[in-house]
Image (cartoon, rainbow, N blue to C red):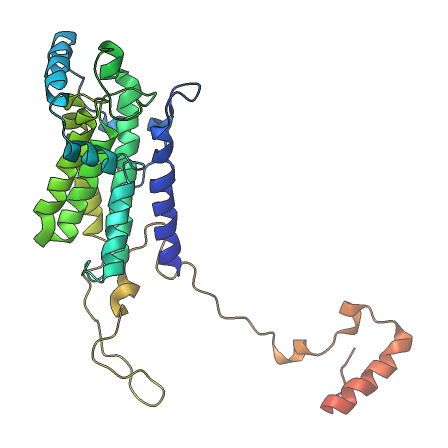
Length: 314
């Protein structure tokens, strides 16, 4: 139950907090302090600040290339843009994991780890991306070229780096580590997610490249943390046997007790403590403690004598 609540908390943060980044022109810049939010795995967003964006001359060259590229958009291209713009940068990736589980598609021995580490990676990558965004404050493409068509609403936030690319590559690399046989398909999806922002006219190719590099860098730290969580532990000892004990050869989640918690100090951190029972002599009524008037003590003694055969002292 505790692990489910943790997963739910992380997923909620991942899906709702970056969602506000997609609002446009709501009376001010979107989440200017997002880069200061506390991260799960990386030290801070500032410590993962990306390199400076291209020069003005390089930016103008990118704008010309974007105009030519966007002019070739097709219905399939627009469908891809709409698909990746359906929600926050994390939305499609969490939806991917949920759909796999609902369809019964194998998603590692511990699906909750997939949810947890993918969402952690996307969250941290998003925080780091927003720290760099407001540090460099690069204008959106359509702010410099008003004739550049845009397929989606232009976010009221800096362009560099791309938070969609950062979240996508963070998710893809973690998924590739957890499900290595499908690594290339996840990376192809990440590439498509980042590219969709260029084709939509809201970010430069260099924004996407920097975001992708940031996402991969964050993913490295999350993957390293996942490798030390104890999920690869093996069965230690022999399960007890006898009447009333479970019988079987493949106990489910038996090694879960060896996992390293993300928030608690140990797996037994929230284990209920055994109730302390008072010594036998302290269980009987203490007249002074309950301040029973002297006139009522005789009647109370008779009541206790009838039910227990014992007479309390005091």
